[in-house]
Image (cartoon, rainbow, N blue to C red; front, side):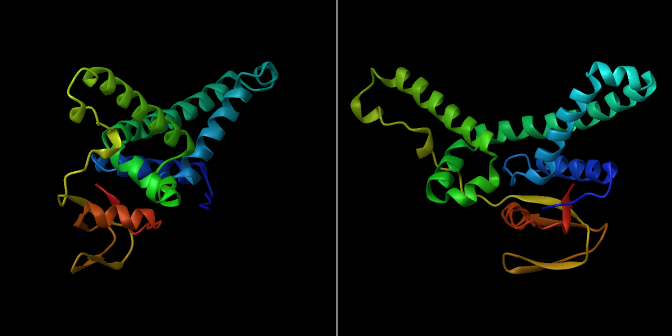
Length: 204
């Protein structure tokens, strides 16, 4: 579990996590519970504190406004992160359904429990919608299931910036990472490394 020594350190980590998710437009990255769940808990807690009548009696208005601004700053990033992931979940629904069915443990590294429930409901609604459309078609055309759609097999690339010195394998090539230096990696390698908890680079 990640630990943070200051609020600023936590904010910077959230910026990194959100930026990674935004930069990799087509692929869902592993969910970051240590960052996201912790911040959501803190936002909920701080909102309850600020809205408590006793707090308004004890704290100065300026102090309350400072805390509200801090909450808004974190809330904006969290909302951006979660909205981006929902779009990716919808776009990658067939592959994610298959992953959950074949390797539940790995699937739940990519999805939070709530996201997994959303995926189930989303895929069910799509299947029901399509079923109603094709029910009058010939029988051999009525077997559509969202989970049966296959993703095109193509290699995609993305830019990363090194955070530490490291040598990583990207297919048959060895890529040397250095702090502040940009490199190009295949998306499959990026996702694999982030799934393993790598903090050697960030997406740019």
